[in-house]
Length: 299
Image 1 (cartoon, rainbow, N blue to C red):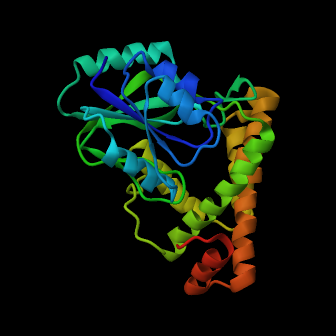
Image 2 (image 1 turned 180 degrees about the horizontal axis):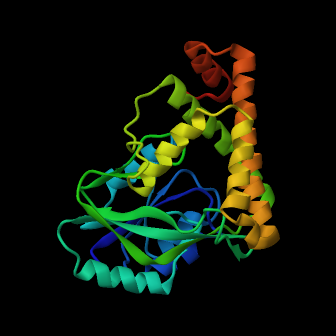
């Protein structure tokens, strides 16, 4: 076993938690669950498999994950971030064991490529693979950035390396669950995009940089995306993903995925932004009050 602990955030994940944990046992038995009030068997299953569980009221992803870092009962050299609907392949487990056993002291982080499974099909095209994510880092060298959406691990210092094998993101819930979840995500995305324009909060975020890390490049492109006209940008994004990045080669699942994730969801975000401007105009303080009144969110 590696000197590594894994932090996982949960809320009603009984469909996924056993698969996730069992895949991790090939590299560590030190798993810390931060649960935000599950009413199903998530906590029961996790504890039965040997995970340590703490309960904490949800505020946002960054605060919840950083709570996990600060309250992790395992004082390990390395930390790993996983989502419940993900699991690591046996090849990745072997590679992690090999790399961490003899890693250089100047390396502080490891990038892992994520493969997304949608409707039973691996989304290889459309710009969704490889998607490099900083998932393993030295315990004192990283924190989850403060952001309303698409939070990344911010590494303080040190070099990074890329692993060759993948982790898998395969959610087992139905499409109704997916659309409901993304409707809720859309509010957070609206706030994140408006924060770029209005700077409601000066979050501790990854520095936007086109030729930097995956996280820096993603942040840079998001800032650029935020500057494009409403309703035009989701169409451009869809065309780019589906045609230029060859998403159409992933068949009907690829069409569904890129339409829903790349057009429908982002169009919904723009519609919600339009609603904000229509209801209260573009005054910064009026927008703050709108989100507090309508959604109970202090931005």
